[in-house]
Image (cartoon, rainbow, N blue to C red; front, side, top):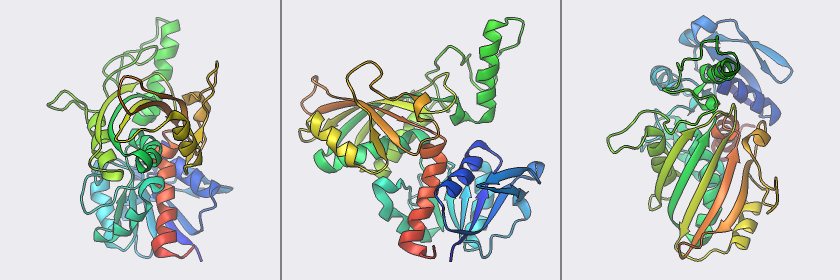
Length: 340
């Protein structure tokens, strides 16, 4: 016996990826519904070999459905998630709306799978920010071994994290650079993204950080350990898909780079590609479409007593969003619902 699953926001980048991953991982589905706003009503989306027509989210009855994977913005989630949860359907939400709610578990299954058991307070489980998700998968096995004191992370985040309009903007601006008669004024971003980098993701806060940077701090503490100190600089780069991060870690105890490499190789969800030669590392282009988070450039930091540096790359539409949501659904099914 399988599950009745609804994918909310099925016509967007992340919603379509959720459907793909549910099919790829052979999630035990008895029935699946693709939901979207009224303006997308009837749009066809793929689920494995099947073609689904989207249904109207506004009139959909969640009663009798087991889980709903939400891939819509916080404003729409605020309206529809309580409706689904109130009907007895467990919401797995990709927006930022519930991530910091103490009554809602924030889950990366490789790190804190047991946290899904706290879903019942609101019938909602939150999916973390894309940049946080890939980093904590790498941090958790190292923290378990040597206790992380502090993390300094600089991100190199692709435009797909801002949605389809941002992908189109990068494409149009890139073409326009070679054809100056074309208009390439920025609309999604505050400055040109083509052939440029922008050290600004989300809104600015009073202390000078951006909300994206704050998210990485708050979410790492909630998922891994509230005692970890985190400082982040988040940068948008002219890459279509795939986030990269340069991560500096300070530990309580000494951790040799060779042992760290072995720990990361054995950890779930990670793939270590770390050869000290030309091309002996993974870049965003190479991670697209893959389930794994890739780790490269593992090396000792000689400027502090117990420090390591590493390079972390992942497909942000997968581990950073859709894949993690499906993994949460799998974990909830295995640990709590136990139907599949």
